[in-house]
Structure formats: C-alpha cells, structure tokens
Length: 621
Image (tube, rainbow, N blue to C red; front, side, top):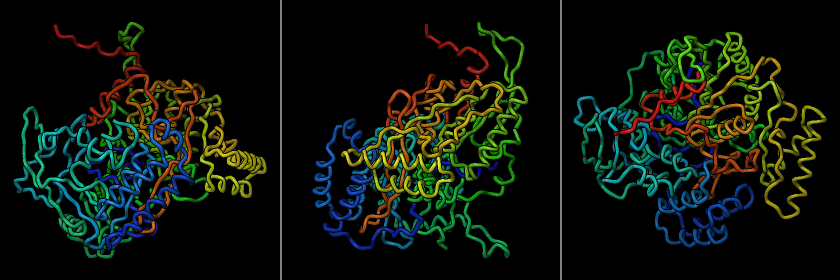
C-alpha cells in the first residue's frame, strides 16, 4: 500500500481546516449581504437543525441552552453585523454552539479576487504538546532569506499568550469539536494563518512570536501579511513552479508546496493541488465530500467520519511513490526494530517484529515473541469493502500462521469512515459473535427514505422485511411526537453480515492505540473492542464524534454548506459516544510524542504485550 493515498487523521503540516464543496456549490458572494438576506440564511440553518440534527435535545440538556432563545439571539446579532465577514463569523459561531465534531459549516472560496482575505506569518507545523513544531516555511520564503523562524523551532506563545489560550479565545468559538484536547490538536496550526471566510482575521498588525530552539528561547516580531486570497494563491503557486518537460505540458499543474491553496473548482486550471490529511497523505477532495452527501443508505453508513480535517494541498512526489510500504510507514510512525513487512496487507500497513518476553515478576525470560502491528489510519481506505476485508483477513491469517498471538492496532489520528466496514473489521478479530453498539436515528425524511428504499431494493426478502419494520417503527415513533428513534442495533445497516471469523484459530491479545483525533468510526471501533473486552486501550480519550454526518448545501445568499450529525451511537452501558468518546485503560498524553512519531506510545503498548513492567517514576530526593 502507498501511504500517499489519504486518510483523514491529524499529523499534517499546514492546518487550515476547511472542506471545499466541490459539488457545484456557489462561492461566497461579491455583494455585501442585506439584513434580510442574512436572516434568510439563518432561518435556512435553523430549519436544518429542526428537521435533521439528532442530538438537539441532548445538547440542550448537557450544554444548558435553549434552542429557541438561541435562534432569536442570533437573529438580533445578525442585524448588527455590517460586513459579510462579520456575518460569516456569526454563522460559524452558531454552529459551534453545539460542541459537535460532525456539526460544521463551510464556505466555498472563489478563484476570483475581492472575495476573501488571508493573513499569514509564513510557517506551518504540527502540534507537539503545548507548542507548534515548525515543519515547513512558505515557498515564497527563499533559502537566502533572513526570515527568523527555522524548521524544528517550537512556537510556544503569540503576543505573550499561550497557544492553547489563544485557541480557546479565537478559534474554538468558530469551530468546536466538543473535546478540549481535540480542539487544541485541530486548531493549533490555524493560529498562524487566518482566512476571512473561515477562522477570522487577526486584530493586530504584528505578532510577537516566542519560540524554543534547542534549550534557548527567542522572541521575534513578525508582521501579519494581509493579502487578497486570490493574490496569495497566485504567488505561492508561482513560487513552486518547476520547469516542465515537453510531454508534461498538457498534464495538470503540480506543486510540492505544503501550504493550503484555495479554489472553487476541482477542475480549476489555476491550481491543481491534492487534498492532504493530517498524516500527510493525499486524497482527492471530491472523494471526501461525496462521502457525506445525501444518497442511498450505503452513503449514510459511510458518513461516520470527520471530513473537514484538511491540512494542506500538495501532490505525491516521485520519492514518495518509489518508497517501499515499510519506508512510507516509517515517515508516519516509529517502527519496531527488525520489523518484517507483510505483503498480505494491501490496504493497511502491517508488519511483525520480535520482542523480548518477560515473566510475571518483570524479568527477562530469554525468549522472544513475535508482535504483530497494523496501522488502521482510516475506515475508508479508498478500496472496495470486499477487497479491504479480504486483505485484512489475510493479514490476520498470515500473522497467526507465523505464530503471532499479540497484536498492536494503531488508530492514532484515524478520522473514521464506514460504520459497516469498521464493525466487520471488529468482528473479524473474534471467532465469537461480537455485540455491536446501538443507534438512535433522527426521525427525519432522509433516514426514513433510506429504509423505504431498502424495502424495495433489498438483496433478499428477509433484509427488506427488516427495513420495513424499522420504517414502520420510526413512523410510529415520530407520530408520537419524538425526534429520535428507539435504540436499534447498528447491524440494521447491514443485516446478517456480522459473522464470527471461523478461520481465526484463537483471538489475538490486542492493544489498541487511540488519541484525541480518533474520531467517528474510530470512536466506535474503540468502543466495540472495549465493551466486548477484546483489547486493552492505550492513549488519550477519543474525540467523541458519536454519529453519522450528512452534508447539506447551501444557504441561499452566503452559499454556506452545513454538515450535521443525524444519529447517535449508544454504547453497551447506555451512554452516548457523542462528546464522551472512549477512555483508555492506560492514559497517555499522545500529542506530546508527535515529534518522535509516537515512539513512546508504541513502546508502552508493546510492553503490555510482552509483560515488560512500566518504568518506575523517578522521585527527587
């Protein structure tokens, strides 16, 4: 497998988190919106919440607000806005009130000038604890420049304020994932490049940057460079142009830049950049958006992912495509010494590696055991479900044939994907029936249409009958005045398909790695393994994006897209995954180990599998 194919997670370099609606949506308007137009847009948004948003009552109860009052307050606030940018911020703030990772808004930027502005400082990086670890400089910064920021600098403050405090005050009000640590990881890069149609422009002309370089601390004052977004695009594209061979002239323009570019069309002739996720992997943007568009029930099942995790635009380079799968994995993760890659793992990188064994007293026995490792970076790996499951099963069989009994599954930064695929993969880890979570569905036309369609098009009469019963039950429940269905087994989306893995001789001893950017289907996968006692979970509490997401476009005047949660996942104990996530048995601050490619987290997991005792804390005398 080539890791240049994208998964939605978080170890990217330049994080302007915005999904462009590349499905025919109009860009932001040229004109200044009237008060009537603003109010009309707000009421369109309100109608979507009233009809489709599953957790509305749950959010009112847990967050302590009144939806009807909230609507009136935002109408009054909209009347006071004087510019489009102010109104866009207001719309983002309304959506952020719900503290929901699947609940977001997006504007499509035009490729024409005079629609949006960008303010930037000139660098990007990844979160490393409380700091931003600088990984890239803008391509317009030449090698002989005196620009003071260097690769591997750790930015700790802006204007004397901690980055986390600035995220809380400036960015979370515009996009709130409902998990504090997820917000910090998601937003940290966006502090350093601001866009008027997404995360608001800075209020000062300069930024005082405090950073650590090695053991020394430095302070630099940098100007916020404010430009028309179109101008910014053109300048960065020009800075990355390379001489082209004669036979390449008709090919799409490529760039090795690592900063987000903007375009209102995937077929734009001005820009041809790829969609990069937070692991630095590449995906076509249209594919991501299509996963959450309205459609058949299969697409609803595929919508268990967070899709606005865009970090940058960049193509696969020649060096990337010539690397071996193990070399590509090493770009993302610390790999256990003497690892042997498994050729059976065509969708998910996997290897086996020898590790020392320890007895119950924590002493070396002199023996070695083979540890298996699988990197599940997405539950939507860009291949058919049939191929993915076949490859996954073959990987497990190959491991067992080699005597592997201990398995490390890495889902760090996994942004989700298909509910059905994820459940089938969880079931494949057991030769006994696994209990799947339950779902409560918003009693909307869209969900009921899905089940009505299935009653007519199901592949068997039995499956059609199950769909008919669900539909009748939903109609009856709605007529009683309720907004949510009863809690159905999530298997209603794929009846009869969750069967024990009879070819599995013995279940693996599994350790599962998760963190705050493990979202949606990744949340659910962790919950399934924990609730069925199938794994020991190591890492940070997962994001808590606990349902499916559906995209609605668009507001009539600002042309804003809205994405909403339309179901709630219910765990075995009756609790929602939404805003709660899954808490590991062994907690670690995973985001503090990004610089080492999570070496410490992977080591802690393998120590559990080999019986090596955890190091004792050092106490000062």
